[in-house]
Image (cartoon, rainbow, N blue to C red; front, side, top):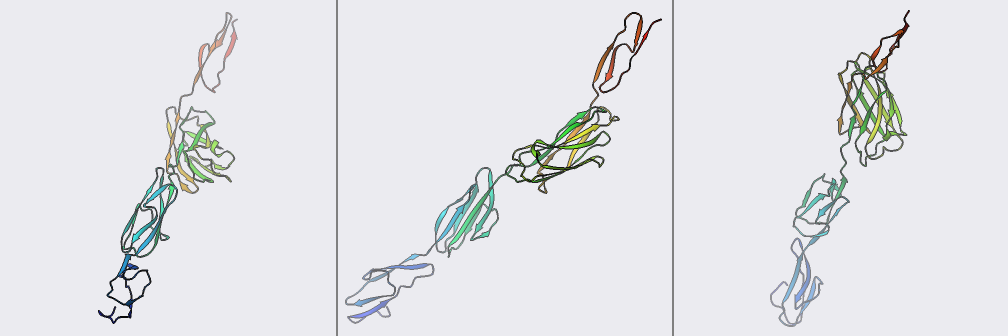
Length: 301
């Protein structure tokens, strides 16, 4: 009202003016309803109350599979207030992204809206943890002159990764052994294979498929080696994966192997001659595996 006293029958217009952050709700006392402005007829002394409530806004909080956001759902926040949210990944998952009003905030674990004066959204997404990809070379051994000894290159469980191409480079001590060929492993059966063993001390392998590598670990390839005849028994040469790329991304780790030169196994040829002649050599004759042994038989006069 614009004055304290009014003549009987005067119609007074009342307007409720909320402060910033509040809104008018309804009239009390000698006025009712929520019409604003509202007219009041002065036919007696009047007492009128304008009721106000603080403005509220909604923050919609959602979380994808693999984690939670707290609080969640439609969260009501008073005008000018702050509202904090906590983002947590379930076991076996990690936070992939947190979006506030559609804008990425990174992989944060909490976020606080300050001085809220509008509706907002916050959305958390999660991704399953993947085990580390480890490429491994198996140990092997062979004796001088032995051929076609297999050395297996394998990989740990790749989880849900989609792998269509693998590049491997294996280096070895060419003073002891020589790579002669490469075959597909059980895990890459049906894939394409390109290999090069011509470079001394190195094998390059490219594996590729039109279907993704099956989940789970297994053998990727098998490299065949011959042991040089000049290799000394007891010598040990490293088998080192200098490259192990999966979809052009290096493996998380590599476990290298070794090749040990063993002594060739021996066998005994027992040579005997009856009365009237000789066999040379005679008795228990020790012969290395794969070696030749000649005997001469002669009759006495």
